[in-house]
Image (cartoon, rainbow, N blue to C red; front, side, top):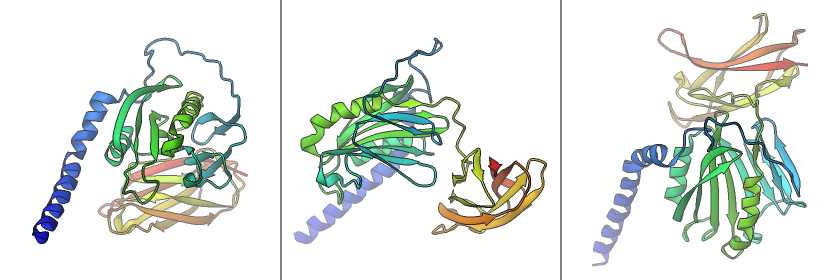
Length: 308
C-alpha cells in the first residue's frame, strides 16, 4: 500500500510539472494579449504627457545607466550589484538580511519581456493576485503573493512586484516582507513605487538577439584597459568576437572570447580584460558571432565609447 501511494505521489508531481511547462507558452501569450498593455504605453495615449511634481521626503537614488530614479526612506541604504547596476537593493541595514527584519525593496532590470517574468511570478507564488499599475505614465502589472511554505528561502514571506517595460528593458520593482510586517511595509512600498521616474533620453541597452553585454555601456569612458563582460548563447563553439575600432575605422584590437556555457547552444558568461592604445577621442566596440558556414555576422552588438 505504501508503495502505491509513493508511485501515486510521484505521478501527481510529474503531471503537475508537465502541465506547467506544457501550458507555459499559452499562459505567457494570454498575459501578453489580455493583461499587459503595449510596451511603454501611457494611460493617456495620444494626449500631452502629464507633468507631476517630484518631491522626495527621503533620499533620491539615480541610476543613469538604467534610466531611472527613485525616492527611498531617509536613513536607508542603496546597494547596486553588477557592472551596470542591473539590480539595486534598498534596505534599512547596510548588509541586508531580510530574515532579521520586516522587509526590503529592490529594482532589477532584465532583458526578458514582462509577460515571461509575470508568468514566472504567478507560477512561483502562492495565491497570487494581479492588478494594473501605472508608474510615471507607463502602464504595467502588479503581482502580490506569498512565497511557498516549503521554500528554502523566506518561506511564507510576502512579495509585491510591479513589472514595467521601457527603453528596451523590463523593470521589476519588488518588496520582500515578513508576514507580520506586510501591512506596515505596503504603504512604504506604494510610496516607493509612486516615486519611481524614468530618465528620458536613456539609450537602449547593449543587447542583441543572443549577445547581452553588462559592460561596457553606451557612451562609457574607457582608458587603455577595460573589461568586457556579459552573456551569450548560440555561437559556434561558444565563441564570440570583440573588436574595438576608432571613429575612422582603425581596428585597435580584435579578439575571440569563449563563454562558459554548460553545453552548446545554452547561455554562458564571459568577463575579460582588454587593452588598447590610441590617440583617437572615441570609437565603437563591436561584439558579434559568425556563421560557421560562410563567416557572415549572425548577431552584432555595437557600443559607442569615449576614450580618455
